[in-house]
Length: 303
Image (tube, rainbow, N blue to C red; front, side, top):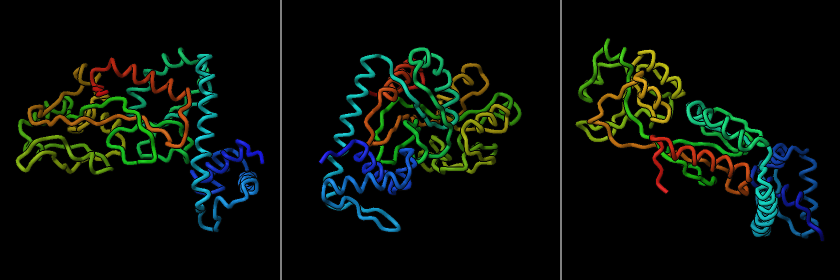
């Protein structure tokens, strides 16, 4: 009996993706090829690892036990290969990174030139998404997520945090007046998100407590769109400092209701699939981004 790494990879990917078809797409193979690899593995082990039905796949007790060992073997092989790449100091290959548009534009894009100069053999792909994506389905290596994490199937590496505050353009304030109290917001145009609703709770103290739910006059799915609306004088907005730092320094946006603003910081995490050994290209990218963010005044980090 000589189990191959390809057979182990087929087995673990079928489990991770939930179907032979999805596993074949993820591995860039045919569904029949993945199915044959899984059958060969079961024949060699003389056990049934997965019960196949028309609707779903279900691990057997033997399959669950073997899965642990299979993951360990694959992780060890990948780690050994990556260690050799690190020893050569030439990490290479495609790296797909996903993040919300504001983070891509204001944080990652300025870092690309320096990263490419240091790691020219890494083929970097930046993908924008305002929604939380499935890393496997979108073939993404690492995603940057802002806010509280909910997906327990992912590993997370903290990169920092960014404060949120209420802002407006000087032109808007000159025309409509500057709110002096939280109650004054009732007479102003407020800019908010289409979803999730949690982003439309502003970090303000008011008579009923902490955190003010707002009813937006204009909604947008992207923080970058809301930023441009605020710059154009469309209303007041609540956004993170990482995307408004330059605007505030240059005076294009100014904070309002600072005295009534709570210290609320959005955590920034890099996430990657829990069952994937950390590739050197991912390590290099995250190390580079984390090191750069140490020098940003907005990116408070607690190690």
